[in-house]
Image (cartoon, one colour):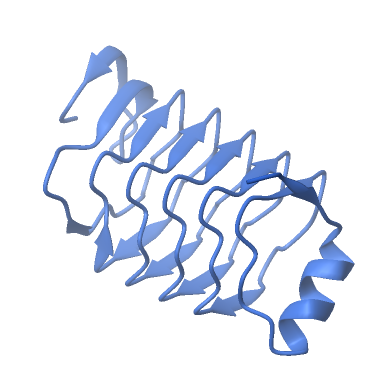
Amino acid sequence: MDKERITTEELLRRYAAGERDFQNIILEYANLSGVELQNIDLRGAQFNYVNLSGINWNQCKLRAARFWYCNFTDAKFSFCDLESTRFFDCNLSGANTNGCNLTWTHFIRVNLQGAKLDGSCEEPCEFWDVIRWDGVFIPGHNYTI
């Protein structure tokens, strides 16, 4: 499936109009700080340099999404599908993944200080060079931190 580049304004306009299917979109250099998104389908989406601080995701499909250089400070993920989602060079400090599917979620060079990874997974998450929730840097590849 082809990727569709959209702007923040277009995403929010279409969402407000009732659209929920945003699979495989690309959103870059955007600000979604403090936005609340429910039941949105972002499977396969790619976010580059997006401010998602304080965002509230509720029952969203984020399976296989890719986040590059995004700020998730104090973000809330409630009952979202994060299976096979990848976070590259992101700040997830203070984030909460309440009731999420975290199967094979990848955290690569991310800050998890103060984060609460709370959810279920059939297979473990993968971590590379992360700052864990207590502020300790864990180098290399790990399945648990």
